[in-house]
Length: 264
Length: 171
Ligand SMILES: [Zn+2]
Image: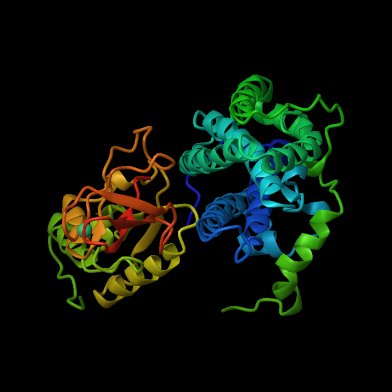
């Protein structure tokens, strides 16, 4: 359905390219994380968690659809949500590196989910005041869903962290292995700076301490140790990915690549 | 729902179209119409002379959204409004508070417990809300699973009559 908000960036090509890129990054993080959660279907430790992760996968892919459709319009090259999801190669994906990391065990998946939920809570809340009303509307919808995701992921983080010796050890190991990807969450580049200057995106610098405080609060309740800071920021949002994304896309895109334009 | 909407004043026609949409069933909970669900946001003839119908998705990833769009299109086509414009309205986002009071009664009548608490309550989700049994009214019920037969429902069991039931979550 049609775009109705018009923002100043649509008149300046460099600004419009940054706007496209900004929305694409949000879209790809939701899409890739949603696809990862979908891999749990039929494999989760209990039916309730199986259904829960599938529900969140649906929410995330739904958010990605809204964002990809919008990104395609901003780009103005006629690419729709399906073209963007299924016909791009890994270097053209702009998701957070954290989102593409493999599922590991349930505790590992919960840590990845919780770190990104806490990030999306800040980003979407910040976007409620965006000068881009369409992005603000998508964020309002996504924020409601993300609160629910965070309640689930932080709930499990606490249960596992403050659970048995083995669950504690496993979830701490998941945290230790994934923590290095968190440096990317609030590392602003020229896209973020342009969007912030235009009033479209919130200032990442202001969001970082709030994210950090929420993380510390949950970690304390979960009796888990926050790993030391990791200076290397990774660059998934700039298209430089770990080897895991390509494998994930091979599965996700297989059908559309093999039978272009196939429909149900 | 095949009655063609007769020419007439815009207000009368819009009312007739609302009545038409009140017969379009939600594909996941067919006892509810899309009007009961509170997802029809506007029905109006605009300056372009065409009917504009605004529909909001319940959740970003709700699998029923496409089915609902098709059903609305079919109903409007049948009513002679093939040029109607369907608009997706995202703001303000849908919550279970948009369910009409008729929806609550219809849910209860078909054995699904309607949402129990205001959306802002901190008790929901992890701390399962107290949900009376839609069959016997007992308040001694327990949550079996936070996730039920569709994304909007949780699974409960009544300790009094021993029957399982669905609960439409507060979201
Ligand atoms: Zn009962």
